Amino acid sequence: MMNKSIRTSTSLFILSLLLGLTLSQPAMADDDEDNPAKIAEMAKAFGLISLEEAQNKALAEKPGMVKEIELERRKFRSGWDYEVEILDASGTEWEVYIDAKTGKVNGVHRDWF
Image (cartoon, rainbow, N blue to C red; front, top):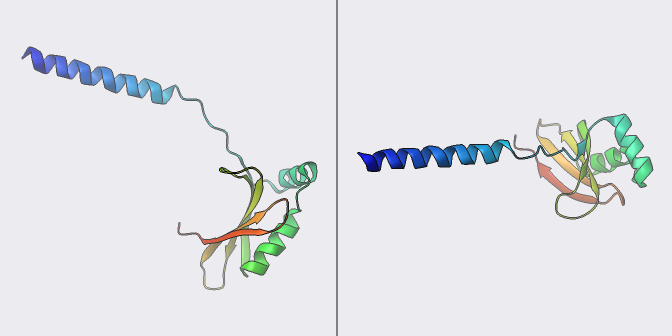
């Protein structure tokens, strides 16, 4: 009987410790920007290609209708990318990544969600 009580107490202690550690983590800021006025301001300040240039390059790569454009800080290497979400004629959603400094297409991926 005593063994079961110790195991329950230990389990509750570990659970409360994990919960406490989870709740005490700082909130992470989002490194994406989707406000067109703010994107234009950042592009000018950082010497990046314009929103319109990024949109034109993305549409040349994947024709369709632009749903959204975000300016994203890259996660694994330095720099910025425009993420252009495009809806093609068949209704498929695509994400086209444009290097915000050079205008080079960094990737085209089907959006599965």
